[in-house]
Every structure is written in C-alpha cells, then in structure tokens.
Length: 422
Image 1 (tube, one colour):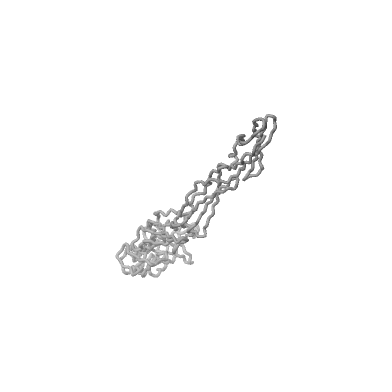
Image 2 (cartoon, helix red, strand yellow; image 1 turned 45 degrees about the vertical axis):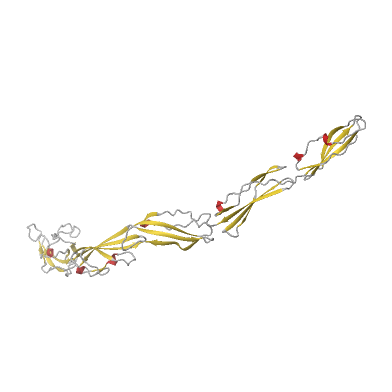
C-alpha cells in the first residue's frame, strides 16, 4: 500500500492532544485492494515545553502487505496564567490599619488552579509616607508567568493618640496622685512632649480655701509634625488638718509670738483672732493688754494640697501677780492631847493669798521629819514608825520649819516651834 504522513499538529496542553484518528491518513491506496488503516502507538521524546509526540499508523492490504506513516504532534504551552482579581491600591493613615497580605489564586490553561502567597516589600525611608508593594507571581509548568501587584501608601495624617484613661477624677487633698505617664498607641511614633510633662495649673486660693481643681496639660508632637493636646482634670476635695494647742499665760509673762506654737515651715500666712477681744501685731499677742480669759487664734496655710491649721488657745490669768500676804502667822506650839487647842501645826493668813503651801519640818539634828506640798494644816506631830522607834508621835521638843508659798514671789518663812507630845 501507499500513503503519506498525516499533517503535523501543535497543541497547548497535553490534554489538548486529540485521540488517535485513522481518518487523518487521507491518501492510503493499494493496487489490489482497499488498504486498512490502524493506530499503532504514540511515542514521546521525553521533553517538555515543547514535547514532541510521534503517532504511528499502519496501512495494510488484504495480503498483509503493510507500511507505517507517522504524524508529529507538538505540545507546547505558550499561554500565561490568567490574571486574578487584585486588591485595589489603598491608602491608610496608620501601619496597624493595613490588612494582612492574603494569598491569591488564578487558573492556568494547562495546570488548572495556581496559588501565590505573594511577596511584600516596604519602603519606610520616610516614616510619614511608607510605601508597601505587594506582588503575586503565577508561573505555570512551562514557565509562563503572570505577575500582579498592589500598592499601599501609609500616610500619617492622624495626630498622636494615647491609650491612657484621662477622664476627670475626684480625690481628697491628701490623696492626689502623680500625673500619669502618657502611653501612646501603635499609630503614634516618635512622640515628644513639649514643655512641662505635664503643665500643672491649680485654682487653689489660700485666702479663700475650699474645694479646688488641678489641671494637667500635655502638649505633644510626633515626627510628622502632627500635634495634639491632652488634658486631665483633678477635682480636689479640701480637708483641713487642725492641730490644737492650749497654754496658760500670766499677764506679766510678756508678749507671745504665736509662731512659737507652730511646727511647720511656712510662715507666709496670717494669724487670725477667732475668739477674744484683742488685736494682733502680726503674730504677737501681749497678755498685758487684754482682760483675763481665753483667747483663741488660728493660722492656716496650704500644705501639699490640703489646709493645715494650727489653733492656739491661751488662757490669760494673773496668777503670777503676788497678793498681799503680809499677815502670815505660824503656830508656835503643837500639843496634840485632844483638848482641841494647838492640836495641829497651822499656817494662818495664806488662805487669803490663794497660794499653795509647801512645808518641811526638821528636828534639832537637821533631819526632815515631815514635809508636804499643798499643806492643809493637818500635821499633829505624827512620826514615821521608822523615825522614832515604835512611837507614832515625835518626841517632845523644839523643831524647825521652812514654809514656801508657791509662786507667791515671797521669801520662805522659817522659824522654831514647840511640840509637846507627853
């Protein structure tokens, strides 16, 4: 038989290779009979992109005379993967707002679905205008490639923001907290506090004390020259911590500097008269210029946000002024025998002076046999058991006394007296 090789064909994918078809042998002929065309085999050259397949057909007559013809099939993928839908270019004001990069998928004419994780590059040479480029590449088995990309601009147009809770607070004056340390969110980079950290203002009035307000103010700026102001108000409940002092002063004790009763360091305040008819000379109070009685003074100053008050009460008296005690008489004899005469050693006339009597009685050897403060004219010769054996009375004899009228300004009274105990 005779026949020509079928025309060669070229396809993109192995799946596009047609099945064997004897009809491609179009001119088979024989001198005696109608030859039979049959598929024999396909053989590959083992290459790819392109791959050459040789397809063989046989042509056989009735007497089994046979020839082979071949068809060349070239498989060569020249079509790149399809472009997938790509996220649109976007602009954000903060890097943390940029969504995560997600993989993209597409289809290829020969390889089916392809997925790319993508590659991200960042140009942060200008922190106020960061450029992010995301690229996804799809390569099929024949190295046909499709590349898509997205551009993200991060342009900082938002002033700094803090994560602190700067709500207004109300506190007692003795529990004012320290100003908080500002903590900025992730979108605020390289923030600088301008001036005081923070600036503190207070409307506390020491001349008219009461609840008051403290305001903390922070002025900040970031590296993109974006500015912000943060404010927190502290409403303070005033407390007055009062220290009370009492003292007794005689009219002749001299002028008193009230700061002598003050334990603080701030002497810039003013002493005030709370009770009593008097006028102060600054902090000086003179008992000689007032009537007898109680005088109350107050001194208030600011102390670490609170009010510190010293309240002084001074009782002005005349106890330092001696009374007329010229007519003082003392017992010359004590005879405790029950006849109601000279039963006790007595000091007469001191009761009119208002002074307490301190007394000491000595025997002839100079030993103290009796002593008393605020003596009440009640000694009747009683002796300590250890002083004169087992006797409860001192021996009959002459004794010596020293009498002191306390705070009278008078010299002690001294003398001798007789005790008769038999």
